Image (cartoon, rainbow, N blue to C red; front, side):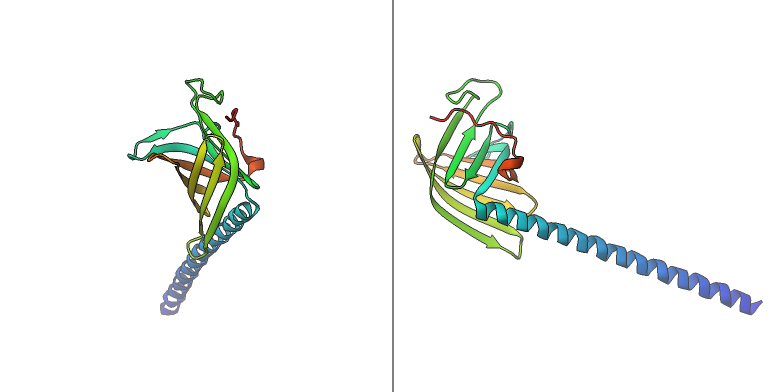
Length: 180
């Protein structure tokens, strides 16, 4: 009888230890998978930035006072295509000079400073865009998860921040209005 109790005790102990070992392996596997996915996204973001071929589709716009407004990402964006950039704001409720309720500025990129933070899997980009309606400075923060913020400043004291998803041009769903 003692041997039978001892035998069952050993079986139960072994099964508990085995289950704990599997849980630890499963957690490591999830963590490793998450890190691998983050590294893949980081490399894709890096390729978009190095090729100068991306769009920041804004879900929100924020003014210099911190007021945030939910916007349509199809008509509110910052886009870069090789040596040119397009900055557009629009509204679903108005008609503007660009045909989508706002303004579209398109011009050449004069200055491009890209900084990579491999430890935090993030990028910062400073660029200067010369358009027919003004000269604009853009400061863009991009995380490997595909989110980004672009702070736009011009010759006036105003500031506008675009907050949204960072995507390649070919996967973008933006509509470019008529630029001035």
